[in-house]
Image 1 (cartoon, rainbow, N blue to C red):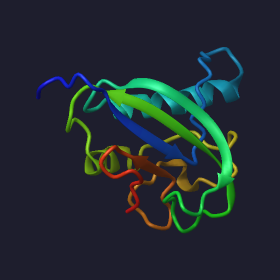
Image 2 (cartoon, rainbow, N blue to C red):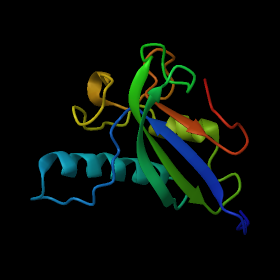
Image 3 (tube, helix red, strand yellow):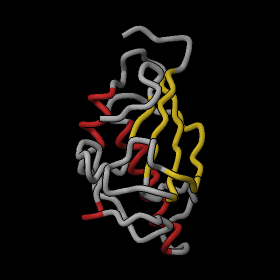
Amino acid sequence: MAVNTLMNSVIVLSLIDITETKARRGDDLKKVQQQANYMTFIQTAGLRVNPNPISVQSLTDNIDNLGFGEKYSGKQRYWEFVFEHEYTGGLTREMLLEDFDLIPVLTGLDETSTIYNSIVRTKDKNDRNVVFKLPDNNLDIN
């Protein structure tokens, strides 16, 4: 693959708390667990490319048109994680859906939604708790 001089952006929307706290063992347990989820997302994205994290922010708004599963609706807290990578075609919608689906996470943090089975769901139309925005699809809804 050729290196692209322009970075490719990916936006991940998550109902799972992926707050970046920079906490380590011995720090506040909740902050350590939030950081663990954040690192899980970084490492999962890093299976195929070297992600360059840009931002992660917590938002609270109506999620009805964001592509989450049918089980989730109304005003909820969600996280927007933005990262870039250098390789055009290095990540596709199918790759992200496959790589992130069924990854275990820590729950019971600052989520307002109930995350069933403490796993990421990207493929299930009822339980989808993570969605992706890519440059070629704007909002990825399965």
